[in-house]
Length: 328
Image (cartoon, rainbow, N blue to C red; front, side):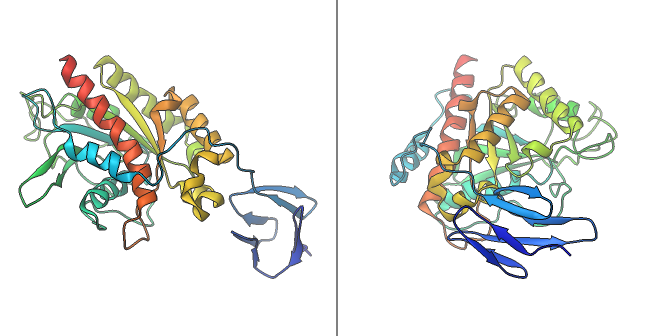
């Protein structure tokens, strides 16, 4: 008979299903051979007894201008490309299926519209890619027909196997501007010059100016070697084209109880810092090019602190893209 008691350093209590501390709810489930404690804290199994300890907060290691959202928002509002040939910076989002690429597009749109928007379709449950085609999302600025001078391109997620998800060669063609909007990726074959969705004469506006890897904080250490290799291969293709690269870590509130309680703990969370370092090592992306964000998911109104983190990721995307086109 499995014990139903959880010990902490300061409390000891028993319940059938739920355990509550000051800021978290811990749950466990039984099976014939397994007792699992579902929590984002650290659990140690000792002969059926569980010891739970939440990773301590550390000194804030990256400074964020909390409470000054308007400053960064004004920067985005005022941005205009210096290169007269460029109509919009193109920011390509790629990463594993279900990592939150489409949700990030919606979150940026929500931030800039000042209300929750749902421009990009998302799936709350599927582990497979919900995005079906190559699609560019423009963000309205002011009245209809007027858009911000940057746009996000969303693609099918990377998945295990050769017959699932988007292929690395197709992403390379997209970065070069050869893929038209609406193209449905075929995991079994790369787009060819004979395809009606193949753009034979891409302009500066068709090409990708910033590549952003999107990974869920919940799955950084669970990525399969095959998916990780595909992500690194995409990075190498982008490097050869001199395309700047950044990464965002999504679902941070699901990965850390302290961040779920208060998003301003994001850069004081020891566990999130470790996840960022793991992603940096996995993809060889410098730590100062990785930005944790919380996408809008259950909220029905925008939030200044969530917006602040999104802006903290968006500004470097704009700056990196601007630097690239100014070098051309």
